[in-house]
Length: 246
Image (cartoon, rainbow, N blue to C red; front, side, top):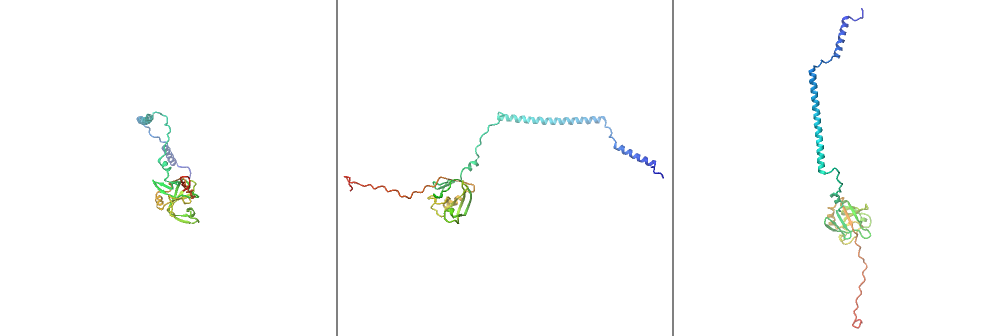
């Protein structure tokens, strides 16, 4: 038997190949001339409408810019920038420069909120530092070193209504209720540099000064009176008519 393909099978394969080639190269049916013209007219109309929209938007933007320039020029009168002006300090900065309390060592008094409180400050050998001090803490009762309070040996003792201060020299000082000597405030200075108040005044002040408040300490402690007695005035001697003693 021969291996050559039969004629009918060859014809069938050839027909299938021709159909596939025709499908791949099939071109769309031609569009009539009238339809082509209608499509061109529609494209031109859409193009004209887009150009008109863009033009209107540009005109509106230019009008807004011109209006703003006209209004700004009319309001300022010229195009030169205004001169710089100095601003006054705000109320917060002005308030920060005002101390919440003032201690006058010369008068032995502390003034806060219009109230005057008598104090006892540092003695001559242990003067109270001056300057603007800041409240860094406060305690209803605090244990303080006794040498700070001038009590001799170093140990801790409890003191009421304590306000802790930070001095300009970055040292610690205190405002304390002077329970050891209620007569000292306003009369004499007997502390080691801290500021002593009567117990009731110390509590009142404690409730009004908060951390961050500024306490200004000014003046100097009064010079203690001299203990040397003044010389006695000479006693006048009466003389008689002739200049002799009676």
